[in-house]
Image 1 (cartoon, rainbow, N blue to C red):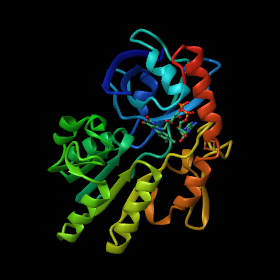
Image 2 (image 1 turned 180 degrees about the vertical axis):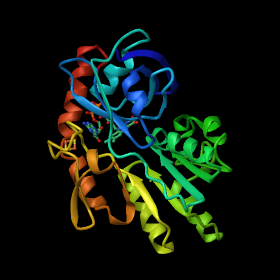
Image 3 (image 1 turned 45 degrees about the horizontal axis):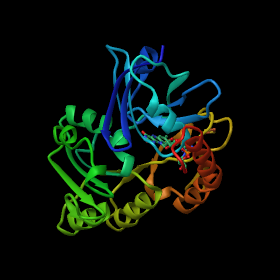
Image 4 (image 1 turned 120 degrees about the vertical axis):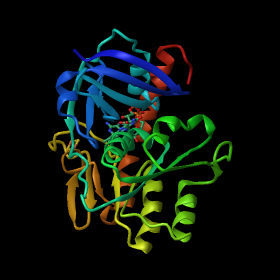
Length: 280
Ligand SMILES: Cc1cc2nc3c(=O)[nH]c(=O)nc-3n(C[C@H](O)[C@H](O)[C@H](O)COP(=O)(O)OP(=O)(O)OC[C@H]3O[C@@H](n4cnc5c(N)ncnc54)[C@H](O)[C@@H]3O)c2cc1C
Ligand code: FES
């Protein structure tokens, strides 16, 4: 169980894996995630269910190597197994059947979190546009896959090496200033990016959903690690989210909480790299 049946290096430092997990694949819905432990003594990390094949029992994850656990995961190969692969967790993406036009905005590693939603809405004949942004050309992936499911795909890179130079929010502003309107905008990526998107869409009064990425431990609402302030309420992103109304999210509080463990995470990754002989 939890055997890796597909492994691809899509762009530097980013891996796609297909995990054989029929129970998760059978129940998975767009918007949900898994919590996995690579080894029995390892830490638990959440990863979005990027896609799933219920017939073959395969769940697809796409992850960037950013620290110890993702680094260890990237060294596993086809035929290896992951110790724990728990899911599907979180609330599935809820669509409003009256909505017809959508703009998805994926920054950084946001693509896994939009892919299955885009596919689902496209199969229902909805009009979909997508903005994808990354630091550089080498960080942009899944371009061809996404083009199949949308009427327009806009790309931005910070350094201008591909697509429009600048940020996803520059393209968003241009589209809205040129009169484009959408029934729903869905943004996922770094917290600062989602905050900036919401600052713009609020002015136009366009419903905006975001998928949050707080620190998660158990993924069942027990530890409180993933708490976020939504409007006047405290919610747990693992059971109440991770998708929320962007207009209600306390992004500043989320950024603060996400940086709590940064020193410890950096230290743990540094020690791991020294141990495997990669230096610091
Ligand atoms: C609902 C959800 C879905 C996610 N989906 C994806 C995905 O599809 N692909 C992807 O590459 N990343 C995804 N992430 C982020 C991913 O969980 C972190 O990159 C991963 O935990 C890093 O672990 P590490 O040990 O390699 O790095 P570390 O050095 O431990 O951490 C690096 C950074 O990752 C984040 N992080 C670390 N531990 C956790 C944790 N337990 N929970 C949440 N964030 C953490 C922190 O921002 C931290 O600064 C998702 C996060 C959430 C909450
Ligand atoms: S991860 Fe523990 S309450 Fe959400």
